[in-house]
Image 1 (cartoon, helix red, strand yellow):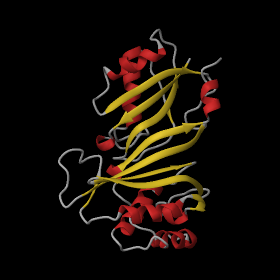
Image 2: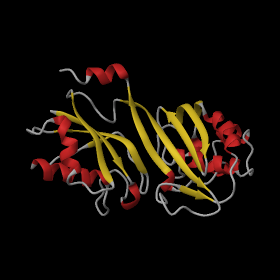
Image 3: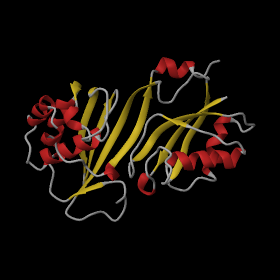
Amino acid sequence: MRIKLIVEYEGTNYAGWQRQKNALSVQEVVEEAIGQSTGIPTKIVGAGRTDAGVHAYGQTAHFDIETKIPPDKLSYVLNMVLPEDIRIRSSEWVSDDFHARRDAIGKHYRYIIYNDAHAPALNRQTRAHVRMDLDAERMNAAAQRFVGTHDFDAFHAANTDIVGTVRTIHSMRVTRIEREIYIDVTGNGFLYNMVRIMAGTLIDVGKGRTAPEAISEMLMSKKREDAGATAPAKGLVLMEVMYDPKRSRLTMLR
């Protein structure tokens, strides 16, 4: 049977989601936990990669297994052996044709900034610290220029081999709650480092160094050097992987 997992993790101690030869990954730890709990070596498929130091609240994965453990109880069993920085939020049975990566129609990312003269003692591994006061309203105005279908060639890591750079951003919002600023973005797909470069560019807008209107010019130029710096990995969280609601309901049926 095929099991779907929703995985939450703090990525500080990991070299990203995907299994690697010479570094510890979240995928490796989860696979080992499944093997330890069921006695069955298992390979899991994630909805997407997260880089070293990036976190997730709603990473989605699937795997195939025959076990007597009820699917909805598997999360409890796995959490008993997983380290504290990885949690299985839910586990459920799905149809054999469900695919965590191929069936995904979008993702929601959140970038968190701690905006204060002093760095935080708490949650310091899950927030990017910016000392200079940021204008969140100005950042939000600039963020709206990302919404829509654009060529994001200026907003992905240089020297990466990709086929196409056109993506659709469904929504983007910047909000401030006391000392924290949240950049929430949803889209049909994201290029390597795209959200972090967008966040770094918006930080420049918040500092007054870049005009909101300049975002449109960056999109048109398609030059990486025109956009802002890549914001630190530790501020980024994969909040949710989105699926077609009709498809999600069908996955519960054989």
